Amino acid sequence: MSSEMDSPDRTAAPKEASYEPDDGVLVTQNLTKKFGGLVAVDDLSFAVQEQEILGFIGPNGAGKSTTFNCITGRYPPTEGTVYYRGEDVTGSTAYGMVQKGLARTFQEFRPFDDRTVLGNIQTALIPDQLFSTSGLKGETRAEAIEVCQRVGLGDDMYRMPDELAHAGMLRLELGRAMATRPDVLLVDEPFAGLAEQEIEQISGLLQELRDEGTTLIVVDHNMRGLLELIDRAIVITFGEKIAEGTPEEITNDPLVQEAYLGSEGA
Image (tube, rainbow, N blue to C red; front, top):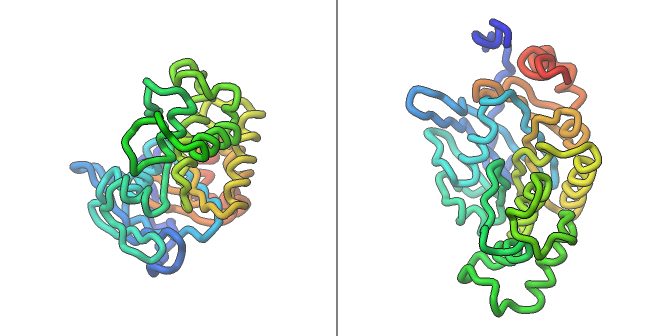
């Protein structure tokens, strides 16, 4: 990483836009998260439009996953506001955000190890009931089977999670999030460790979800795969937004090339 990255020229960054609560289905205003003396997210504002696929781009440690955590209720923001469909949801619980229609996937997998793939999906379909898959209605099981098939786990429904390869675990994590029937889905590293054909399959699924009405925010380090998927990108480094625009605009932005794309050889 260059010395310029160690001491970034923040005067070159674009002036931060100001957003109103109704400027998008999901809006953050001056979002900040500090861990002691570390500023992980720095005064970040952006808006996501209905049925948009927004990409979040930045080096490791840039604050992408922390931003997800602040939006979805895993961490309370230190400062700033999160709006969902015009409502101030800052500091809401993760469960409360799922009930409102916003879900996410995690880089670290967290399935129920005592249940099959199908059982994990069924559990996500019934968040307001006891965590038991016994006695579920036939339509719930049928919906869970459909989700398994959509994410490419149709042949693995009766396997246990620890029997799945890495790609299968990624698909299960995505399936569990889809099973909550979200209006907005935040997807963290969906292409990690996947072969090119698998990336194309997951990209196709995410595009299908968008076409069916879902809004998506996607983080991934596979720049080529991400830029081919998204409508628009936000680039952050050191927790601060440095660029925003279409994939073409982002690729040609000198600040982005210096901070990320050039250093990654994308």
